[in-house]
Image (cartoon, rainbow, N blue to C red; front, top):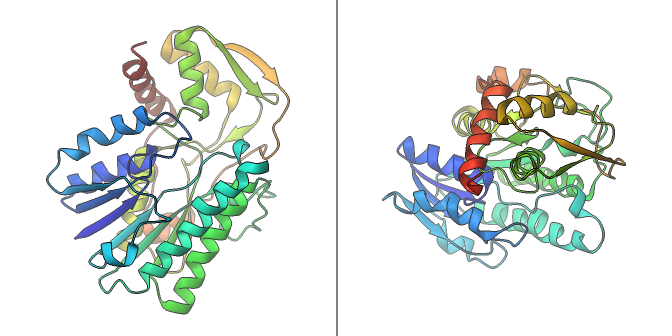
Length: 315
């Protein structure tokens, strides 16, 4: 079976590619190496994959790539490529989010209409589509009212996926990821920044009181959800993918201190626009349709990320 993974050199994409290869799939990875964070980290993610005989890689911009010519024989498309970052999505940067999150998704869906072998188009959405939630855990039926431009673009792309299913029978499945962490995490993400600051004995910037809670999801559990969506996701449906519990940020920082043996030097700043106070996924629908069940405890996942951080920075 032939698969395409967009954002293949990124955090989640590189983990997904590795797992697909282990399962025996052919994988075409695509990544444009956007300058949102250092290219060296993505190159490190992709390097082991390049040696695999069933992996091919295109360092291309999806907004310019000839999609119709290149992927007519694809059986499954995993669309993970996106411009990430809630706090960076305001102001003049929004045009980048429009292109990379909405326009590119529409181009891929247009190409998917004419892929004769396509069995599933799995779109990586985000819990950011919910905004400030009225119900915890949050079900997929909860109103979607994003409070950041990033969340708006992820919701728009999710709606595009649905309408291409509804009008053209493209077998789309959308997965709403909740706060993903683990080895290869982007350097702008909290756990990566916190562990690196601890390793360097530098301050950690905490926005708000630290009492905000998140449903933290280990990256390998996210990978499992993608494979399950490929195999048994119902076309046209959307599923929450979370870690199965939520934790207060201050408690997580204390756990990180214990794991790293380093002290967290905290500096508190005011809450940032676009941040929400709490998240927690209701994953019953994914459990029923996808047999999804998160398996990685937060402590175990953080230990794996700390080992990766130490190796990456030689801490």
